[in-house]
Image (cartoon, rainbow, N blue to C red; front, side, top):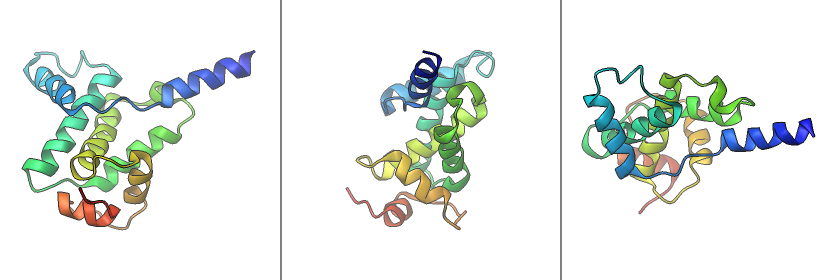
Length: 139
């Protein structure tokens, strides 16, 4: 019985939040307006804000240094404790990885893509076209 409960908790804690960029950016904008934004954020909210940041950096700025963010995402996905052992900063970093990948390749397995990027030797700024070339995905 205990093993079943642990297994259920692991599956629930390691599941990805649905990617909804509009909602993620609403959350990010709300956090920027909040006086105590860093103190009043849950794991899910920090992750959503990160998704928006990553998405915007890829689409509207020069790009993003993805290796570190995707390494954090992969570490979280492979962690036995899932959200329990993840800080808000780490949740935001993992979200940036997913948001950036979504901006470049919105129909891809994010975990596989994050593993490819996190295992790379590249730590340069990645634009949308760099990400697409690196992951071999084109819209």
